[in-house]
Image 1 (cartoon, rainbow, N blue to C red):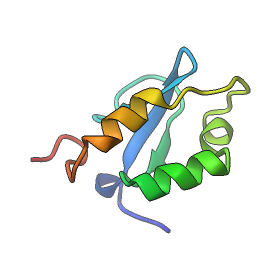
Image 2: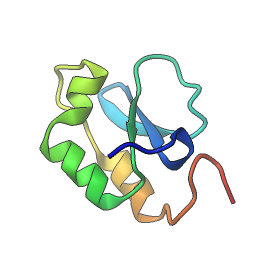
Image 3: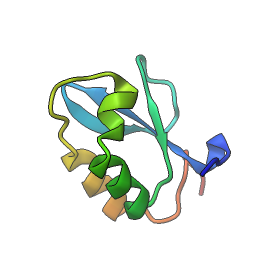
Length: 79
């Protein structure tokens, strides 16, 4: 599904850890995803992050899962 950039979160890889780039300013490749558990789970199941970020190492999802669980409806720093 296509969505506007303001409705998506950018995910980047740093030291084989997936993290949210909420302001979309971090260097390197990024993958855009809806800020929902369903969308994150689907991307992980399909190995979409590894393909989009062009990494071959196993990516840890611990940081984004913790953040998503407490994320609520905030997107890109909105209130």
